[in-house]
Picture 1 (cartoon, rainbow, N blue to C red):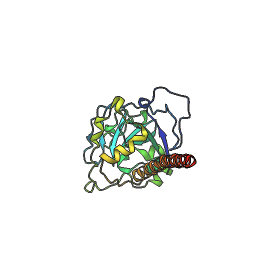
Picture 2: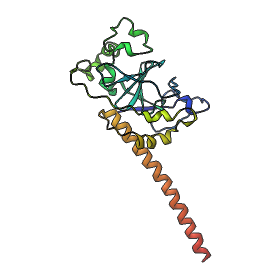
Picture 3: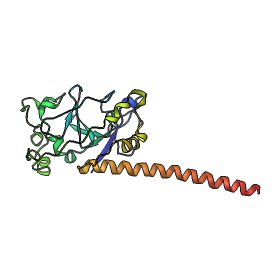
Picture 4: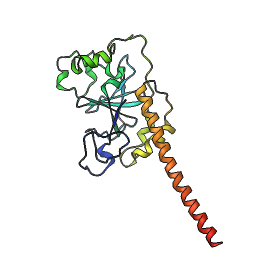
Length: 225
């Protein structure tokens, strides 16, 4: 599964030239997908779906399985925080319930949506081609009477806006402390597992530095003795 990281302009003061896509784990400031959500959005559940959409947003903005999802420039992005940073998600990995959201709930539908039925999902197979549809067979067929319950919204994030919006390094721990939810989608589970691994590596790095300082201090004291 492939992720790519995008950091919103809100989090940094300047934009620097950089490739449009970078691997998850590489921290380059100033990358943006053109989305700036300055405060926690109003989210409304799509009827008969476990997905929320943001009716007042100027983007195709959704919430599902504990994460925010944005469709922009024919790509899908996801984040556990309402204003990113955003990971690009491969088309083959986007959850089926996200793909099933009807056309009418896209606030900024691309031109190729024109003429598509408003109360039906976008024609992803027609748009992305036979190979994609073969890989995601059955994405547009499901039991409407067996739809899972939606994930509860992470409303605690309302407290974090403007200058209080946490840096990427802080987000995962704040989220872990305030949001109790067990994801069901593999791509979401992988997102959290990878963040856990990054945090553990970060913590170990700090611990090693602290131990190194302690050893050096002990050696200095021993020399004085």
